[in-house]
Amino acid sequence: MNPLRVAVTGGIGAGKSEVLRAFARRGVPTISADEIVHELIAGDPEVRAALEERFGTTDRARIAEIVFADPEQLAWLEGLLHPRVARAEQEWFAGIDAAVAVSEIPLLFEVGAERGFDAVIVVMAPADLRRRRKPGTVESRSGRLIPDDEKAARAEFVYVNDGTLEQLDDFVGNVLDQLQA
Image (cartoon, rainbow, N blue to C red; front, side, top):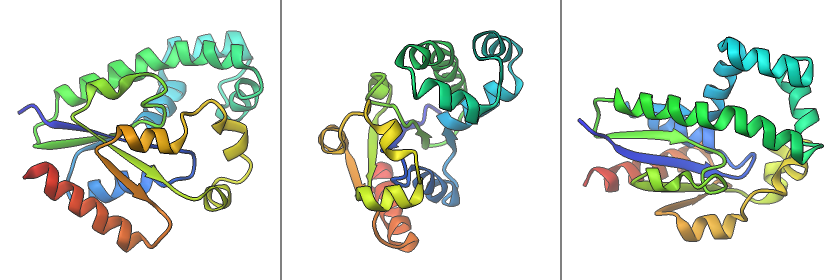
């Protein structure tokens, strides 16, 4: 079975991972680009060697300090990781036997990956709430992201995540019902 491919994206601290977990609770296969990156850094010898050579470390926090302060370093890191993440995701989708499968991709629109999906969910939240959820990272990492309103205009589904987990879960249930209809 070729699943309906759904992408979840949104700004830092908006609640993308919570949306992904809500799909998983409903038995929908899910994958996260961030988790793939973590696995690559932890276990891919080629990636680890390249990081050690370039940055002198494979510590994600230290690498983040370096790349988010230097656009050239960030571009190099994305060039190393993005093709591998895309390949891992495609292999994962190819092995799924389900009607719907969901991938969390923070930089979906920024890297032009939306074309590979049947539907896109954008998760948004007010800036002050996002800053409380991810202290110290929202401003330093959001400047290169497409604004939420532009993402929302390009998505099939939009959720403003400023309520309860139950409300978020209800939203996901409604989206899943529409996708399966």
